[in-house]
Amino acid sequence: MNEVTTSVQIVLAQHCNGYAKPRLFGGQIMAWIDIVGAVAARRFAKCGVTTVCVDNLTFIAPAYLNDTVVQEARVTWSGRTSLEVRVDSYVEQLNGERKMVNRAYAVFVALGADERPAEVPVFTPETPEEEQEYAAAQERRRIRLQR
Image (cartoon, rainbow, N blue to C red; front, side, top):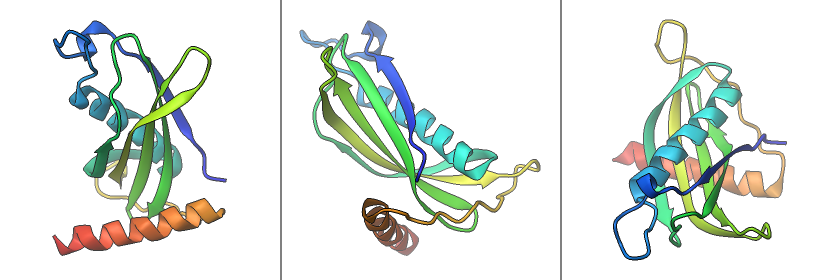
């Protein structure tokens, strides 16, 4: 089964805008996405990685000051030297209930010791959900290559 990498943050004042009810900056959640996504990519590739793009980033709901943000990252596709990672972000209530606030797909390139692109293992979907994500990732890749 595809390993899930998890990150947990508490939204602090420095992460928020200045509204009366402070909301988490979109750029802050993007930074957290990049970090947890890179960790998932590094674990899969067994080497360093660099971010190529965030292909799709959807803000579904806000996160506010003092919310707990939980992020789950998993590989959805791999090519010869690149891989795609899906990162789901949730606000977790004190009772453990979670509400999705964000979903992003990030593409990374593996780097060898010489900092040149390095080959990555083949990602093989094992569940129906992974097969669906893999097919969608291939379509996102096709669209990226057309741009």
